[in-house]
Length: 114
Image 1 (spheres, helix red, strand yellow):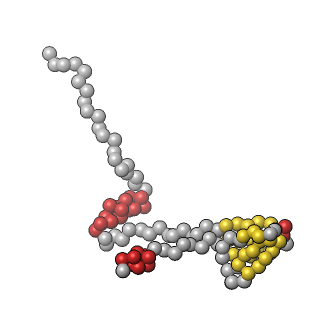
Image 2: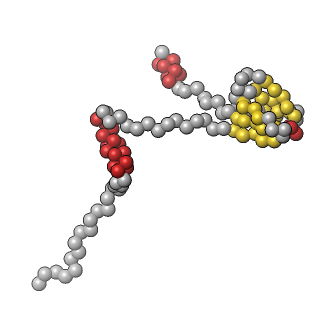
Image 3: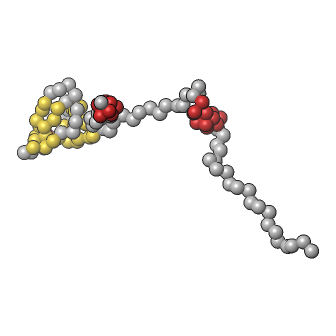
């Protein structure tokens, strides 16, 4: 039972889309990177069609990374996130505060009192 729940929480591996441009200017959007077999690239486009094109006809293959997730701001109503909310408010107003300020030096004793 616990294994099933853990497996459900794990995200499926993200497909790495690719783009292939031929020397004649045709551009194919691919579901996954193509593979080379006997001098021909074999690939599947995003609409599900399978193609095989000669290696000499391909000008460029570009792998596109997964789209980044947008950064979410902390919920101002969540009491556990008050520090992050305060930090974001300071950044919006242009105030920068070091995480740990430099400690003030202790006064030196140069001469002992007589």
